[in-house]
Image 1 (cartoon, rainbow, N blue to C red):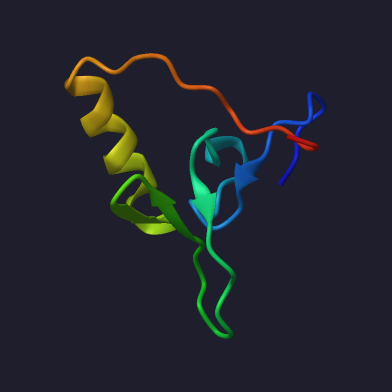
Image 2 (cartoon, rainbow, N blue to C red):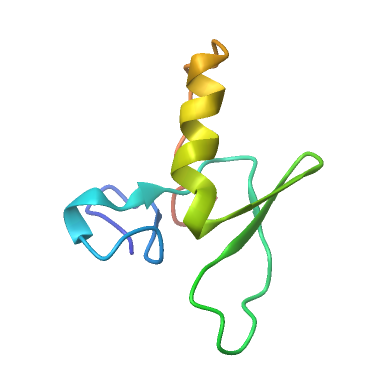
Length: 75
């Protein structure tokens, strides 16, 4: 999903459109696999999926990482 500002959100992160999680700059979106109802991201040496994106972000915040840049269309 893309919002009015061109920010890209992970459509698989939740069923509630109002709670979709953003895709962050620096995350490399892996090609979708047939029948897989989630996206797979690479961030440095970590593999993150739509299903654990929220917990990954919360963990980063709890470790003091508070600046997130949302990926936008055309970047």
